[in-house]
Image (cartoon, rainbow, N blue to C red; front, side, top):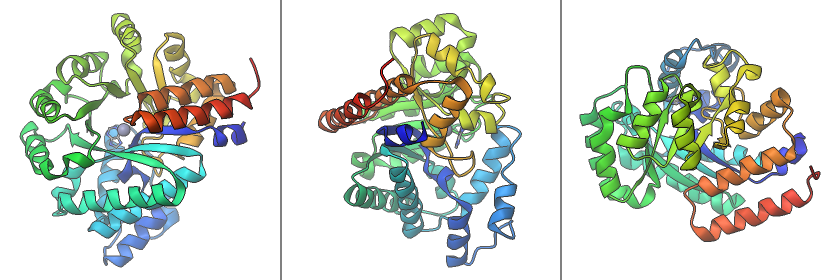
Length: 337
Ligand SMILES: Nc1ncnc2[nH]cnc12
Ligand SMILES: [Zn+2]
């Protein structure tokens, strides 16, 4: 199955580029910039990646990104990840970044976006992998700061596919960000938001109604509201589910307890993603494999999920057709049901 899942042309729609920072690269970048890390070694850093919930992870995640000081570090981070993704059979990535987490450390938005997009172009040239950039607002900071960040992004709008909303979900409902999402909409940007990861099903509804999002990141708690499930199904709103992340952040006890089979049974448009692969035990391929091991899913289910991701991606129609064609070729070689 690993070989089949590796060959399957996968699109990844939920990926925080800062969450791809492997300890090896963290140490290299720390040395380059003479930064003292709170870990004595790569092994010690990895051993510290034990989380109780989303907040305990975010504390480590924001600390780790301290080594990203200039354009070169953003470039190295993204190129390092895109090469790994390519080796795992990922053909398209939509990578989110958290500009406020860098602006507050004095790193300019131009350096962040230049470094990331330079790596994205190089990855496309080197390995044929396509990618888009999503600018996320931090929901545990003020709506005013999000508005300022959007304003700052005006010169770079042509390099952004969408805006997103992430960070600590509890007690930070999406509605707080209605104004900045309305402005993003007026600027022609698509909108997505994390909702229903740790927060209640109501936050998913609020993201749909007040932020007018076209995709929900996570969304696993939608099952608590059957009317919402019906709406998500009827409107074919994609959920970008990240099973290994949910296990590592104790949203669920283990893979066997993950609600993915119920979400599938409910007829929802699901995609599988890695969220923060450096912290949660692997990339998108490992997430596909974990589902095979936990639920016994066969090739046909993974073909459907891979198709959902390609159909739900911010892709031009020509590239979408190419990827669907590659998926078809791969499916022909798969076992028939
Ligand atoms: N899983 C997650 N939830 C919310 N914000 C995040 N930022 C990085 N990973 C995240
Ligand atoms: Zn996420």
